[in-house]
Structure formats: C-alpha cells, structure tokens
Amino acid sequence: MMEKMIFGRYIPGDSLIHRLDPRAKILFVFLFIAIVFVANNALTYGILLAFTFGVIFLSKIRLYFLVNGLKPVFILLIFTFLLHLFFTQGGQLLFSIGFVDIYEEGLRQGIFLSIRFLVLVFITSILTLTTSPISITDGIETLLGPFKRVKLPVHELALMMSISLRFIPTLMDETGKIMKAQMARGSDIGSGPVKERIKAVVPLLIPLFVSAFKRAEDLATAMEVRGYRGGEGRTRYRQLDWRWADTLSILVLAGLTGVLWYYRT
Image: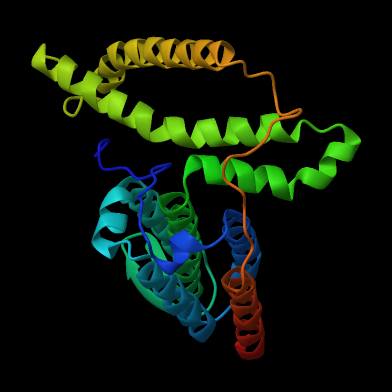
C-alpha cells in the first residue's frame, strides 16, 4: 500500500491538464475548494462528480491508478460516511439496527459529505500528478509575489511546500522498505492485539526518522554546495507562460459555479 500511494507523485504526460500553467492549476484547485460548498442537493453533487471525472479524463490519468493510490483516503471516507449515518438525526426514520437508528438526514449528509471529500481529494491529486514540484514552486512563488512588499519570504515558503510534497512519496517508499526489512527479521506489524501492533510500530518509526533527517541533511548540503542563498536575485530556466487554455479553465470553473448556483435549493 505504501508503494502505491500517489501523494506528491508526478506522472509526466502530454495531456491538456499537464500543459496548463501551474498558476492556473493552483488557482483552479483553490477556487474549486470554495465552489464545492455551493452544492447542497443530489443534482448539484452529481454535477460536481461528473465535472471531476471529466477533469480526470482530460488528465489521461487512469481512474484505477488514482483509486488504487488513494486507498487510505477511502478508509477515512468510509469512516466519515458511517459517522454521519449513525449519529446524525433528522428527517424520517429509515430503519433501526438494535439500538442504532438510521435517519434520512444522516444518510443524506453521509452521502453528500463523502462526495464532497471525494471530489476534493481527486482534484488535488490531479494537481500533484500533472505538475512537477519545480513548476508548483514557481507557480506558488509567482502567485504570492505581491506579498514580497510586506517582507514575506515568498520564495522560501514556496520551496518548503514543494520539498514537502516531493518528500511524501520518498518517505512512503522508505517506509515500505523498512517494513519489508522488519518482516524479514520476524516482525509482525499487521496482526495481533492493538497493544502489540503499537509496540511493533516503534522499530519502524525510529529508522524512518533517522532516514528522514539524513535525507534532509543531504539536501541542505547539496543546496549549500550549489550556492543556494535564497530567492533574492535568482533567475529561472523555465519561464511560466499563461495562455488562452489557462484562462478558459478558470472561465469553465466560473461556469460551473453558475450552474451549481442555479440548481441550488
């Protein structure tokens, strides 16, 4: 599972989504996060789902690959659905299971919030899968450029966010290797009582932290050797180019907002 996780991974490609300016994609994601809350009924949530699957289709990222890499997120999604299903009251009583009563409002809230969570995860994953870490750094730095006037370290913040995204799949791969090494030595993490599982995790965390600190130290040394001194006076090899397709993507999002607002109850 660790090896298949897609958080922070970049899949090179030549799709329409890959070719968009990183600034457009970052703006798209933040605007989409706000737009999701406009939906409040079955029709609007259905439109959101259809729109999300359309974006996935345009990115040429296989849905199976996306779902397979987000299995841990689906566990959280199922937990959220069950939490609302069993503890949200209101509307007509659908049926009772022992001392648990399931109401119409609980089922509705569970489905709607699960869809909202699902589309947000899909769209944000498409951003990292179709945009290289360097492009994300350049896009964030450009968008936050006006804050330089108030002495905000924009370049350093963008760099930290980019490195964090890049280190997620690296640490996941490292965790998978350590787990296999521990299992080869007779450690059993996936079975037994909860107390024993917690004890078995400790030998996993210690080498993981050691490896993370070593990677961070190697990265800092490499940056220092190459003369990195912050963003002041730095030039870029790759120049960002805002094109008509980037403007169209924002306009499509504005159109989606209008449609959701029109069908909102």
